[in-house]
Length: 299
View (cartoon, helix red, strand yellow):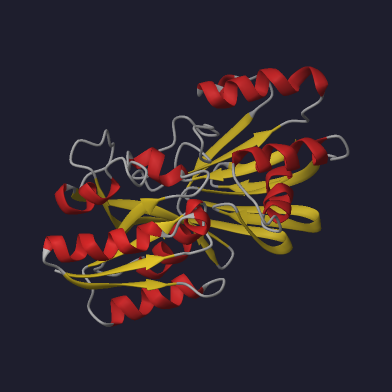
């Protein structure tokens, strides 16, 4: 089997301890695979490296990094015969958690050798692909700030969220979907392919990565009284039952707002826009998952 491992030296624990690059090279040799490990050098470089791997006939292309690295590598593999593999070592790991892929050091390498392939959906927001979640509003603002931090992690995300929360004002969105048009006022607007953002924060608890549908979740204004109950529901997987949280499901949406604002895809900030075109790409990505992963999708 021909493989390519793409290592992001600036992602999560890789920055402090780049040992996973050496482990990946040792693993390739141990499995007797034809492959190599390459490192990213700049933003979006992982996509270039993954496309080159596909062009060179790699059967398995593995991202070693966080959600941003996952997104860059997987984006290059959509609708190709190559299989995506993931060694999660970032702060969120939303897609990995949904698919049952363990962290590095807890079985992620073993899953690449002993696992099986499933085919999942992807989502598209304007020109950008996502696999876990995209969004607008507060979560996109925090993604833009989080991207500027030199030291990330879940604690950094919480700090940035707390600082921005006091002055943030909800936006009004017009959501066009197959069943009609709805106007909503939302503190944050999530577009979910998988059930969670990462860190077991379940924004769309019932979302499936294999139903050809995306879940749009509009969370209302989060004031002092609502904040704690909503956060509790987010981590307990019941935010979909919270009062005033609106949920839409479909394969295509057009979302409009009065002024351009930040978007994010899998936590990475994207260009500010007032019109958001959303579509699902059913069964477009082959992913290697552990043999015993609790999955709702089939090969």
